[in-house]
Length: 148
Image 1 (cartoon, rainbow, N blue to C red):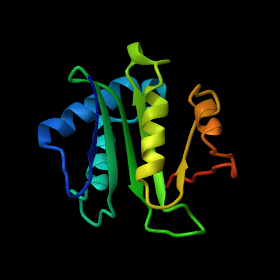
Image 2: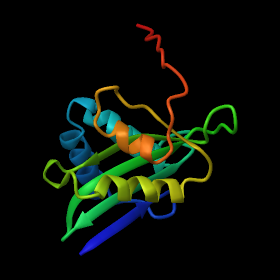
Image 3: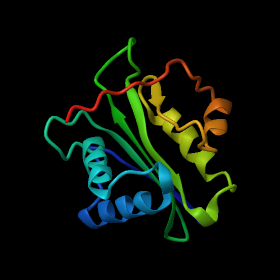
Image 4: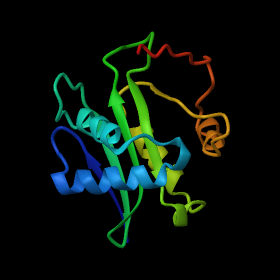
């Protein structure tokens, strides 16, 4: 049985649920992932469990009580000139890819988000094609300055 859980500042995951979500993302984001501590920071921001967090939401897709996909969307606090939301993480279990779970998560994220959504995707990430099918377009080339 498929279950789609939505966590927000009103329906927060427990500490053990946060660990399971972060572990899942760390494992299944593959080369597109971040350190577990950064994933937990993002998750805590989404459910307003960190200082100055604006919120957002976390979607967890479970099949027979096992996590098969997760996405985390954070609010940006901006409106119009920058999208109101940024999809920070989305991953589907390695053994469940190609079953439509990514599309399910993306469609629910689009439905739940209040306002526009931005996301960053590596040019070689196969999920790029799904995002384009859903209406995302490449508007900018991202550049970053990392201060040491």
